[in-house]
Image 1: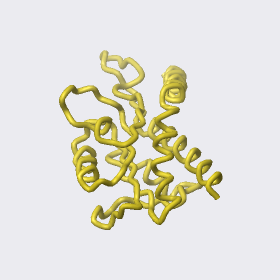
Image 2 (image 1 turned 120 degrees about the horizontal axis):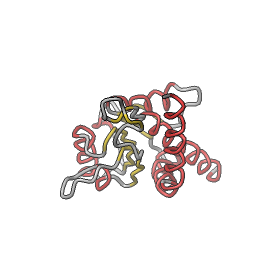
Image 3 (image 1 turned 30 degrees about the horizontal axis):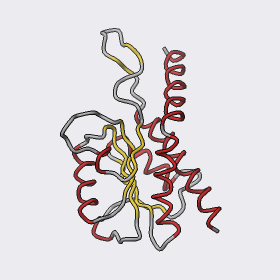
Image 4 (image 1 turned 180 degrees about the vertical axis):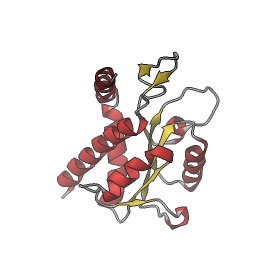
Length: 174
């Protein structure tokens, strides 16, 4: 089972690499605006996506100019936000996205893009959306249900793409 999961995971990372390169660049440019200016990059991960928060703040190589989003009222025009959720339709994440949009605060989002016509989601609300491509498990389970849903692994892969690109932008700026 682990060998099949590893094969599927490798395929997932390759799909993300192939399909999300421009979104990673767009998201990194957006977030780098805070680092270049007087702002911070605030990160809010919902549920298991707190893994991205922890990596960005407490990981071996923290993201410069980053902090956890704890209090929206302290955000300024110079700040940027990264929202991370399992699905683009996550209610809490969408509510945060709406509030940021109403305040005119630019933000990027990482989530699995769920297509629900007529429903607001992170894809339509965010200034840059990075799709994890994970909407169900990667492997068939014994009961027919799919298992092995690596949402946080895909989000972390996209986060590192953002981080590396932000660092390249900041190096060019200096």
